[in-house]
Image 1 (cartoon, rainbow, N blue to C red):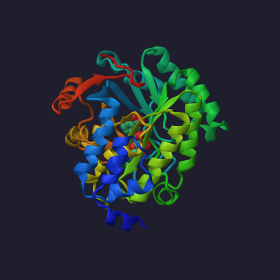
Image 2 (cartoon, rainbow, N blue to C red; image 1 turned 120 degrees about the horizontal axis):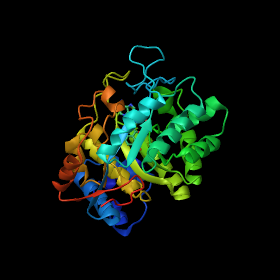
Image 3 (cartoon, rainbow, N blue to C red; image 1 turned 90 degrees about the vertical axis):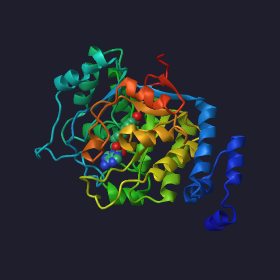
Length: 364
Ligand code: V47
């Protein structure tokens, strides 16, 4: 049925009509977009939506990533970052080391710290609450975007608490928002193959629902370019869209391109540029209730990130500084960009750079 429809109407003109009218795209539309080789039409449609929501603006943030530990009890096949406790290269930063690292934000004029790490098999909630409250006390003006839904659910399990209780304690300690990591692809079959120990897609969504209901905003991601199908991708996007209809708590969608080096899936080639652009553009088209689509330049490279600004993207993340997860898996991008680099990469595309804070308030 689906194939028949694609063959009967390869032109995408009916989807174009829906986009122009602001009508919602359905599962079948999403599959047809993925199956279409017409990348320029897909990009043009995504650009219509992008400009409708964000005009000519491209958002960036001055931020710093802190990956506080690579010790993780899970063994996700796509991850090159994790280590066993005691293994060569394993590290766990103390709160003092985290504060020392964080203090670089003062001269950088950063407004956000993005803090994520592995699932430590022994540390309980008190360590993480102490981490957040210590950083918050020292840098009260800086937004702390910390802990993926995977970490939150792990803290709850190891501490015998509910995710609500964990999130409430972290919020009271100074947590500002949650990053979007750990969503991977929600399909149970894919998770069974890639990350069987990880929380389920439903649990990831429930953790985000709880956060949103507590007034904690978050981002959302999707890891692509491994063994997932187009159906898996569209189902994932529709689940995000459904939760966003309910809570309105997602700020941006960030597709994450799988980097195979040093992982258990090294046989898979890195995603092609065309796939990167399709995922971003189709993300923009399907997620009609998300304000922002972010190109994480660390994973995409600077050239694709620039082109993506005409394919639905309105946010280029930020200066980042010291990202370790993708670089462990072979990313060849720099570990940081300066503000001038970011502004000129945006201006070269004819767009207007706008510095934002985590919650998308304009800084200039
Ligand atoms: O949770 C792990 C993914 C995530 C690999 O919310 C990999 O603003 C590619 O979530 N190749 C961490 N991806 C990064 C992340 C993120 C990044 C930037 C901005 C935001 C945001 C969130 O990276 C992990 C996992 O899903 N990941 N290994 C890999 N080999």
